[in-house]
Amino acid sequence: MSAPPPPGPPLSSAAAPEMEPLALFPREQRRAITHVLTDIDDTLTREGRLQSAAFDALTRLHAAGFFVVAVTGRPAGWCDHIARMWPLAGVVGENGAFYFRYDTATRRMTRRYWKPEAERLRDRERLGTLQREILAQVPGAALANDQPWREADLAIDFREDVPPLPREQVQRIVALFHQAGATAKISSIHVNGWFGGYDKLAMSRVFFQELWGISLDLQRQRVVFCGDSPNDAPMFGYFPHGVGVANVRHYVDLMPHRPRWVTQGAQGEGFAELAAALLEARQ
Image (cartoon, rainbow, N blue to C red):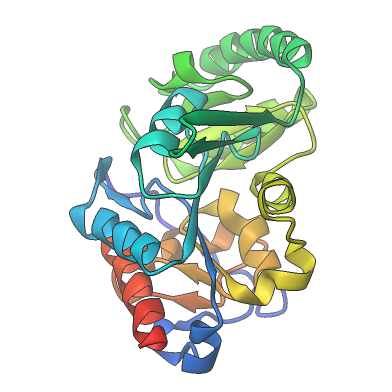
């Protein structure tokens, strides 16, 4: 995967407070953390591959009793596998369209969608029309290769399996989604669009309430969210302990909210750095 597009001018300090090194995250606050939410692409992965350091970090956090949840833009087909195979409490997928949770004791998968199936089918027809319009108007953009496994959104590839598009072309994709009345979010590799008012944060709230009976508003000081790209901004804005892996710096000009802390390492190495800091605080 090639390098992300260069950043534009920074946001004002009023719109986005300065990020501080993860090393300054107070130990007592780290010790209070019980839940770890994490993006996947370019947060756990590098060049499109899951890094061994990141997966080992997930395993060690799980073994230590942390509740770890992946919160991703990736499709339902991938999330079914991730919920079954990874050491996680569950997965929020397609930028909040659903959560999946696999109970290993009962061998039962819970699939909880934001919208009922009939609405998702209607949305897919509208997104199909929008897909043709976007690909016709934005040369170099492509349908994401994981689109066949999506339930609720349309993913337009601008960097994963195509040569990177200029920032202006990426913003043009976003504008076309908006003109059609869709929500659009930029990840590190795709522009994802969907019909509905949900996002990663909205479904994370539902997941916590339905699975654990926890109100995020009351417990967010005990939660860390780790991410890297503009579609993570709602999470960074909500959680006091938002952590960006180092490559988040490529996208801060597109974020209305920045993470509070930033790792020294990039991508999966950055997540492993966060995991080590949380584990150390419990010793």
